[in-house]
Image 1 (tube, rainbow, N blue to C red):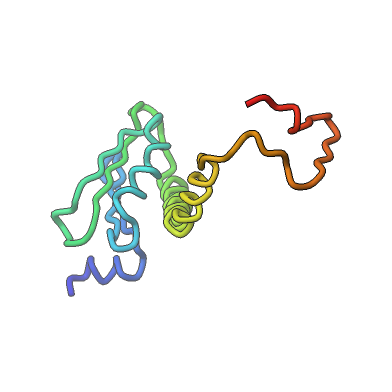
Image 2 (cartoon, rainbow, N blue to C red):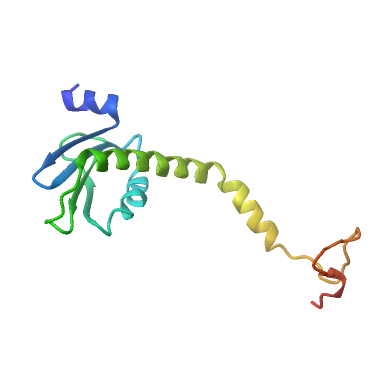
Length: 138
């Protein structure tokens, strides 16, 4: 196994800085391209972002980040630390979205299911703001 891939297996995100550009090599088996796009979208106001499949290592995505305003100095270590946290955040969001997809679909289906508006609630409804569902005209 090449040394770069061994490093990737340990760290999940490898990077190098060339001029004013940070080049990240990210293991696609851990962070999907969708996760990358969602994560790096929020950096696009201050940075030029390029995401492409790596020709260096199979199964990896390459992200190039450079400041839009070349005169701005940026703290690479701080930015990379923030990117790693954001990748974890968006990965977790992706996991939760996938795990809750069926329940969200069920809630939406139930919300838009046909029901009879002419029936009154089976129990008394008490509402402190004075809403009375028995007086709703359908």
